[in-house]
Length: 257
Image 1 (cartoon, rainbow, N blue to C red):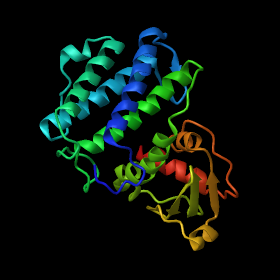
Image 2: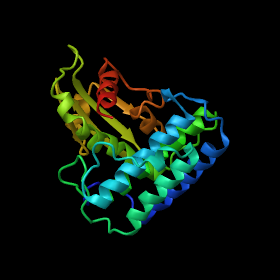
Image 3: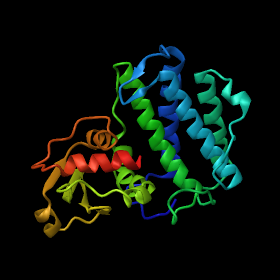
């Protein structure tokens, strides 16, 4: 992982938080009704959420192991045949085994050209685990907040990493007329400037007085709440004045993630 993610946590802290969230995710997968629907992912039930998460773990474990993203029919049949909880646990163990046998600076393919490292995936999958832990808890009416420092880093990751994932797609579809403008997002004592262009997005962690005065929308909220909104898991924290820019930001995020 490159060192200019300003809110990144130490690698051992990512691993600690990921282990905690995974333990909760696994326990609920083992005990909940697998057919319970997941509000944040209406097309999924708990079993489908667990299998999705397991295959994300397995794909990234294979990416690290082989140095390339797996293609074609890469999922072993014995993995496919496992129940959701066993599949989740097996794939997590393969992932963490790869983490344990590599340094964070070791090479690993990712969609961010300047960050092709194992550390990228330690960070990314810590956030993936936290979000899906929240998803399954929300499905069971017991959602617990995401750790504050992880949520601040998660806000930054959504804006600066996940948008990059969808950059090519954004270049082919212009925003609706009028759905451009400048936003400022504030949380946990930090701020991000978001400039919505017709077919692109510019993100800055430096919010000048001028940028703030030019912003059509300022969105402030607690880190957990702002992160959930960015991921489509919660309501919009009250903006000062929204002329559609917040909705357009969410639309573009949804297309990218």
